[in-house]
Length: 328
Length: 259
Image 1 (tube, rainbow over the protein chains, first blue to last red):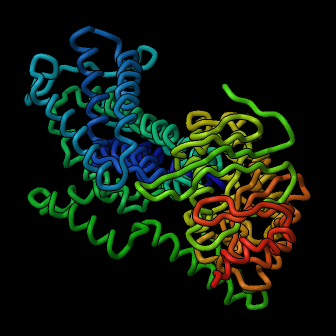
Image 2: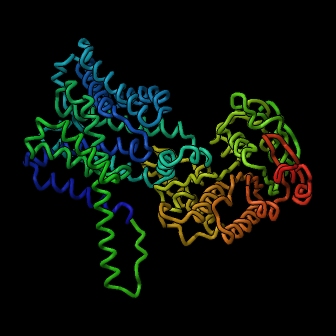
Image 3: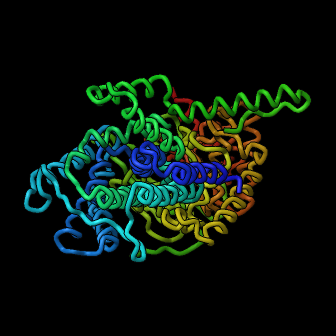
């Protein structure tokens, strides 16, 4: 299957890294965070890159999944998997209700509205002490187990996150290359033209918004069981901006672009200590530089240049059949 | 739907009116379009042609009057539902999806023939694959019909204007519309492209799709139209077969002015 060749290579790489270096801090500990961010960036990209609907509140839905799971499992003793499903359904309902008024807005207005939603949810996490534990958050959240085997240790968590992430990337690749994916791109390209071929643009926007927030919620639930602890800090407005930066850095509407963006922006702070103090500044700078000089994103631009170069070389070897040079 | 009209008319407009503040862009306009014809709407600049089109496709809501499509009252019906009923449209200002290939653009046009949503697509359920195959085939047929099958895998961005105009037609045809509305299809085309276009439009009619077009290019209109409606200041000035309209003194006056 040529369509999914890149995906298979990626899957082997991700799982292979875990199997080869199960005890390596950077692979199984940092790697799990990278994977979590890949899921968030890929899901945000479907909404932002493919359908063209920006969200500055994605982290809040990630947090909502985390908190609902935490509350249901610690306060009500509900099985974590069941709690995960309940969180996802709750997030789906909430984002569906929010999407109705919000997705009518366009451009800056939509950005402001999603920003507002994110901030409101975050304030709720901080202020509603009796429900969320306030700024201190909640601890002693139970872990997960599969068929009676508790998931313990960095390696097991890495593998669980990796499998979920691979599922999300696979699903995203499927969506992009389908009727549903073309409808997203059509909404992005021209809403009036999309409507005139029978696409209910409001419905398409709602569906992808709900889909992407549910994915964020699911990885939020995984996150909270892995950490056994949750606090509002992890879901601030700044994290939403970080996710947007990942998507833009990789390239809008490119699934592997978002993977790339998430990997780079999660790893950079690990290696560059200056990041600690200037995080927000650096993200802002990256966003600006990419928007101005590489509007298609770093990953997408690199990929295109490499393909061009390969084709040129092929063309030079084989001058009798010059390649059309239009692919990619 | 409440009101139904019978007969061989695919499109009927009754007492249509659109006011923008004090300006009446369209006033008391009534006409009917028979199935299987090419019906042209002409008129001097500012006569209200595009306003009429925007009401027919529910981009604007009429101030008064009714529009019937296939006997069904569709006044104010959202455009995506009109499309599902069998109405297609091309635009005066190109509305091509530049972020897609030619084939993908036309595949968007097949949207109403499929049913998969995001979840089914995400999981790539077996029927999704079959549906994709069918949609691709229909899109390829539409490209073939418009004589641009060889461009299928080209990116839409960077194609010349004349090709993009044809691409819009192919995209609209891919849905298999019963009625195709074309807003100034010849605008910006050179003579040979216009000739090619007139052949294409005639073939579209011959394949069973009724065509309603708004056009500036008189030569094209008189060549291919079965009926012509002349608008002036938002009102119907004349309607008939091209010969009748061409010799109508009121039409000549509206176009050339009088002393």
